[in-house]
Length: 248
Image 1 (cartoon, rainbow, N blue to C red):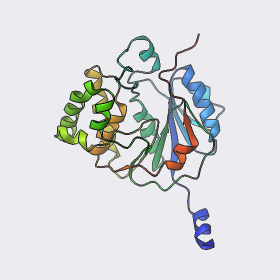
Image 2 (tube, one colour):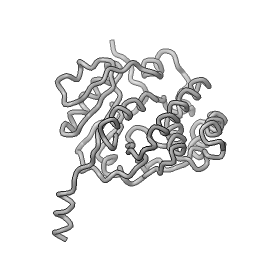
Image 3 (cartoon, rainbow, N blue to C red):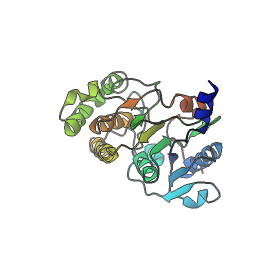
């Protein structure tokens, strides 16, 4: 037993990086606190103000949003809530892509989250790892939250996989904390995510991020892993509550 314990302690840590999206003051402030919860880990932050992170152990990348940010949901877009789903931030994919340029695994966590501790990172298998609290298909999720979006997701499934029924097997991926691990198919995953984001935006559907991620994973041929992140999810707390208003 002692030999197994020593082997575990001496095992190399995961070649992983945390990443997040911090656009506009409320999210930059929260991201600063989040980074300080895990200062020993590599971090990549996509932000509109990299100078806000110069004193932190983080690689801050200037980012001009491609899709709606919180301020847009506050001022222009009203297509979320009331059973239509939470606001979607598809720009998360750019943070993941930046992290995967240097690391085997990119762990995305929403900026409005905190860690109460940081457990030893697990061994990541290729594909995507998500919170097991939401273990359901895209079709099942839509049946409970935003049934009106189902035709659009069926059309997207046809565009990506050739079969509308893919939403019955593809998983709805919880997107506040999840990990992507390279296996050579990550370009297919990100291509499908981009196509899905643009398709839904053209349909004026500004929610359903988890469904797009699930279809992108299916398109890439990835397994969705539900137990890998158990300890990390337990150590994190997500503020949630919708888009944060810009104060002042």
